[in-house]
Amino acid sequence: MLRFKLWRLQNRLTQGQAAQRLGIGESTLALLESGRLRPSPAQIEQLRPTFGEQTGSLFEPVQEHV
Image (cartoon, rainbow, N blue to C red):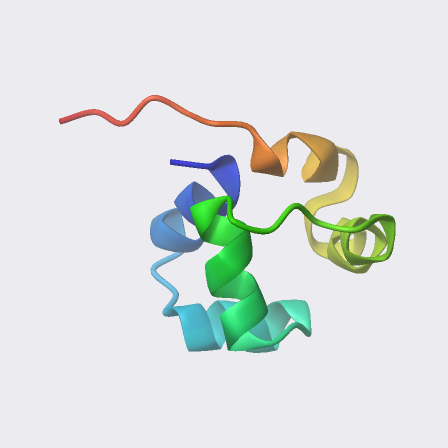
């Protein structure tokens, strides 16, 4: 799982809610969360107001605890 998706789950947001909060489309959010889409530099800048310096690490995998 990517840190980006973990952020959404930890904040108890649906994909629609998270997409609205971030100002991106829901389908774009789903693709970013799944890793099927790498964020463009413009998308990273769009996410920076919410995530600040952590923006670059959002798309790194994290261990899932089962």
